[in-house]
Amino acid sequence: MFIIRRILIANRGEIAVRVIRTCQRLGIEAVLATSEADADSVPARLADRTIMIGPADAYLSVEAVVGAAVAAGADALHPGYGFLAENPRLARACEAAGIIFVGPGAEVLEAAGDKLAARAHAVAAGLPVLPGGPVPGGPADAGALARRIGYPVLVKAAGGGGGRGLRVVRDPAALGEAVAVASAEARAAFGDPRVYLERYVSPARHVEVQLLGDGQNVIHLGDRDCSVQRRHQKLVEEAPAPLLGETLRVSMRVAAVALGLQLKYQGLGTVEFLVDTRRAAFWFLELNARIQVEHPVTEAVTGLDLVEEQLAIAEGRGLRLSQASVGFAGHAIECRINAEDPAAGFRPSPGTVTRAVFPAGPGIRVDTHIQAGSAVPPQYDSLLAKLVVSGADRPQALARLRGALARCQVAGVTTTLPLLSRVIDDEEMAEGGVDTGWLERGLGPGLERGAAGG
Amino acid sequence: MDLTNEDVADVLALLDSLPYDELDLQTARFRLILRRTPGGWTQSAESLSAPAVLSAPGAPGGASGPPGAAPGADAGAGLVAVRAPLPGTFYRAPRPGAAPFVEVGSQVGADTVVGIVETMKLMNSVTAGVAGTVAEICLGNAEFAAHGATLLRIRAD
Image (tube, rainbow over all chains, first blue to last red; front, top):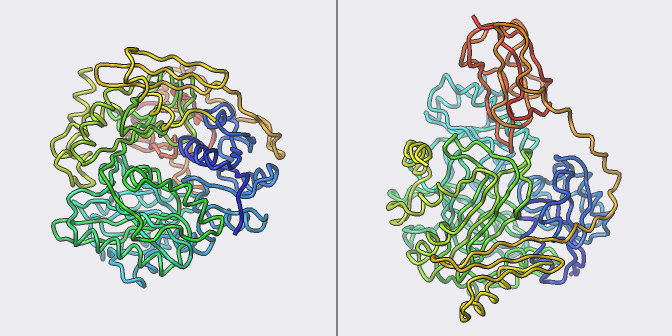
């Protein structure tokens, strides 16, 4: 067991702010690694210290962030999500430098980060998977495999996650270019160009189970539904997943814990599943060995601080919670406010924020890294803020969320706020259990009309 | 350190019982404005402290890439500029080491993909927009393209 006194946060944006908050509450000195583009960002202002690691892409350099941790005299490094969060090289470099990596060990990161290896572990742990496999020969290989799987197929990044590098291919003629572009996107986002194919199931829901393990014991912290997506990017998430059915819910939680035990999972992780609720069937998608963007909805219904639990595991304290001690109460919904223009195909909208007003009140939490004057640089992800609203039940959470969204005002960059209001006002959304194609299917054309009108 | 969501909730609980509709609190470190609106409270928070910078571990100095070519500098009649639809990194090939989408002299149709602009980790395919012959490639591979920067010029058929 070890006590972390100073930590280097190797990330930016809202997750940097999020981690800084918990560290400061726990009395851990928070040193933030910043790029030149982020030197004056909100997390840089909130951190106890900042350390400049280089140009905009320095967050992807293992040498830069570990060098910064050593220079700052940090005991530990928190990687956030994205960038190097699931990179085994970072975990190994931390170990070599005598710095605690807040996350699973390099072997687990390798098993989870290589989506094909993760599939194999899932099969070994008895989890159902979709038909599919690798395309080592690139586009030339893909044709034969896709014919065996049957169209439409999904092209996925073997080294990926978070929806990056995903392409749905319905027409065999488009497979070659899709594989090439997905591969390029995967290389840009993860430094790994390998892609693989899986059967594309539609309609289906995206439901995931939050895991917490200490290498020996693994527990779950409930499920989340993340089916409201555009371009395979999550837009709205909620906990618990609505209208799942108790048998299916329990089966998925048991399956997730089985995979965690198979991997002797240490730290916070998420098992993602594709769910066909009509057939009461689910398939393993991937294991994300990091804290996720949508973790606050789990915090809202469990009352836990997941960053604090991550730090406790990293300090070698072992699980402080038993499965029986984790309680679930109420319902929480998160909306991602992105700098994107939904009326122009979700085109990113970098720029400078001139106004940032958010709602406040009971059941409302806002995780953000923007304030008036903040730069939204084009080199990074477009997430500006997460509005998390909870209530005693789903109808109350939705009602609060409607009012809370109406009080958000972000100016200077185009945001997804108008779209979020439409999503939350929608009747099917109110019923619950929409599928992953629902947003693009239902709101696409209407959205353009709405934007043209005002 | 600034105000957390819990701090704001505590301040609101106090304000709710008072007849005030706005609180504008400013210290050396932060400013917090809370306003009562018909729909409920709003918050607007600003961190005012300057970052406390540790010296960098041999970080390279601010050597950012050259800006994209200035838009609107089109020379020559019959040449049509293909511009960056948004700011980002211009890629001439679908992946590193692959053949570029087009070279000078390539014949293109309006829907031919001539490059990629990567913005916020998303790959945005850029199409020629006009049928013709590629006359000039104005930006190098992996260079930063400003919004509207001319990526290449096409001699329209």
